[in-house]
Length: 182
Image (tube, helix red, strand yellow):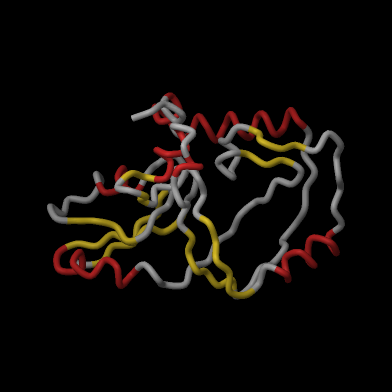
């Protein structure tokens, strides 16, 4: 074998996906959090020993962006930190202007609920303890080659609640301990 490409659905972790592979010695290259879906690169045999050589491949992401709300996890599973008291409808022209400003090289801070390690603990550990101010949050050099607005959509609070609830249900038992300490 050597390299296996697996489609990881929303709700599963990379470790969940490894359970379905019969190879005895296996690992994965890169992370896809439980709320993401996409291709997962599984490495077996001698490919496991060069795992880091797969980490810097270019990737293509497709995502939805929710405007006017900020959460502590930077996704729809988080607790709302900031919310505009009023609704701002952004024009596609304005959104495209902001998109163009993000193309290029950037130093990006890791999301606070990511699994990147700081002082031997995943960053989400520090976030759950509310001790992010006691550590230096790591940053990663990234380059965005292209961004494209596909469509815009306005949703109301009820639609948003249904969307969040449906995503949380996909996590199964994981949604019970999302904010619990280890």
